Each structure stands twice: as C-alpha cells, then as structure tokens.
Image 1 (cartoon, rainbow, N blue to C red):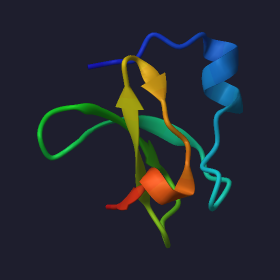
Image 2 (cartoon, rainbow, N blue to C red):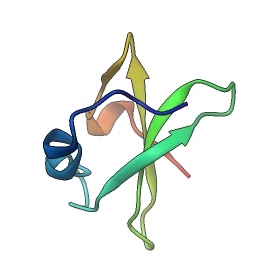
Image 3 (cartoon, helix red, strand yellow):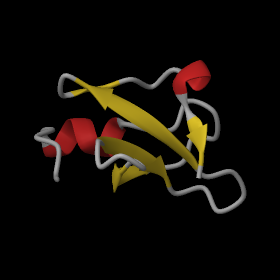
Image 4 (tube, rainbow, N blue to C red):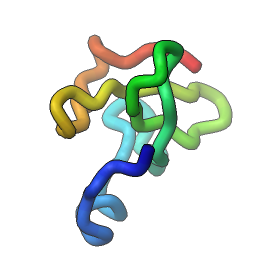
Length: 62
C-alpha cells in the first residue's frame, strides 16, 4: 500500500533519529509504515489514519 503523499513532502521526510530517507513499508500486521533506509539503524514509523507518526518513541526497530 502506497501512502498518498505529495512528492515534495515525500522528499523532505526524514527519519528524526538518523536523518535517513523514508520509504513505504508494511508492518507485521499488514498496516502501512514508513521505513528508514539507514543501514546501521533501520527504524519503522507507524502511519495512523493516513498520517505518518515520526516520533522516536513510536518507532520500532526493523
């Protein structure tokens, strides 16, 4: 499932912990997430009601 985010916003979104680019992903239960592309510390951020939640406390390790 791809999130409907404008390309300019998508390009600006970064992992708040590592600064890495974020890409679409899927969580363990099939819910949409944003995944950090950082090779050393990959994190996943939830998407709730279509809104990415980029809070470090809500991230999970991949």
